[in-house]
Each structure stands twice: as C-alpha cells, then as structure tokens.
Length: 260
Image (cartoon, rainbow, N blue to C red):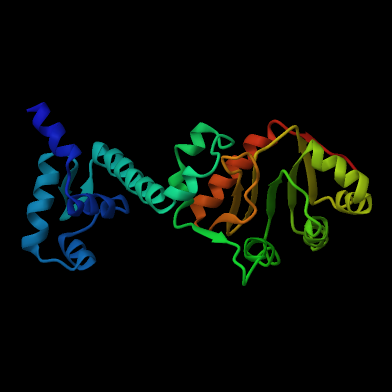
C-alpha cells in the first residue's frame, strides 16, 4: 500500500497538481475551485477525492484545504515545475555560462528568478543590455550592485543616484578599485561623501549584478572565462529581487568597506 501511495504521489496529473497549487493560497469551496479552473463538478470532485484519499487535502466547513503534508508537497512540486521552466527556457544560455560564482544554495533556488528575459545586444541596438539597467535606475528606492569591470559611464550613473538620496551599495573587485582610485578619484570622493552611498572591495568575482526594489539584472562569465557583456538576464519578479539581495550578501561577507 505504501508503494502504491508513493507511486500516486509522484505521478500526480497536471490538474491534480494545479488543485494543490490553488489551495496553497488558502482553503477554497467547490464553487471557488470550479470558477477558478472553469470546470464542472464532474471534473473537480473526482480529483479532489483522489487528493483526499492521499491525505493531501481535507474538507472542513464546506471548504477544501491542504493538510500539512499536502502543503509541503504542493510547495515542492510547484518549485520543481518552476525550476523545469527556468531550465528549459534558459537551457542554451545557462549551459554556455559559468554558474560556479553563484553559491550552491542559491543555484538550487534559481527558479526564484521567475519569468526572466535574456536581453542581447544586436547590430541595430548595441547598447540594449546597458540600457535595460541604467534607464531603470532613476526612481529606484535602493540599489545594490556587484561589478568585476569598470565602464566609462559607471561612475557618473551611480553618483547621480547617490546624490538623489537613493541608498546605493556597490561591490567592486580590488582591480576595479585600483582603476577607480587612479582615474576617477573625484567620483570616489564625491560618492563616499554621501551617507547613503557605500562601496566595498572583494578580491575577485565572476559575475555582474544590479538589484533594485523592483528588478534584477545579471551578467555571467561565459565558459571561455570572459564576462559576457552582450547578453544579460533581467527579471521583475519579487522573488528574484530577494534572491539577488541574498547573492549580494554572500559577496558582501567577503568584502572590505572603502571609507571616504
């Protein structure tokens, strides 16, 4: 019986999984379920009965809700479905880039990037990946970033945001810091004069990241060992910005703060 139940748990149909995902939101009546999925009682009841027999769903006070084991399984299955979509959608991109700079615990949760897009520079728009980030920074409530490279526009853009009172925290590599100190000393002094502006240096990092309150953008190194500045990931999902904050914190723990 246990083997039979295990088989049923691991081979739930898409509709039965969808019912579980719906109930993650909270208890629902049969009417709620029928309206949500636009199905009849004849379609809904047998599937709810199956989930009840598997101890995943229970009916109380006229509503269906997840049991404790049902909630655990529903969340795990939903995560697996999201992960599968992420991997299929970005299969070529992810396989062509070095993911090792992303800590294992975050890589395992890469589905939290959500409905991301891959932005690529084209001949008719060679600044697409640059514009997707910097055109969105004005109006941000906070900005955190990691950069292993230094572009000419980099200092001016972040200084402008800092002067607007936006909290800005940047992690750069030691090599980038040397270049900033040598070629952009005025920027560094002006930037660090703002209480809301922080800069940190880390020995090395093999990705570039920008996270605000409403989007995440990330560049990765290709398998050849160079930063792919022609392609980047961007996502506006709340789960992605939280994921990005955790990624930033991983490198912040290895960094030293630069004082003005």
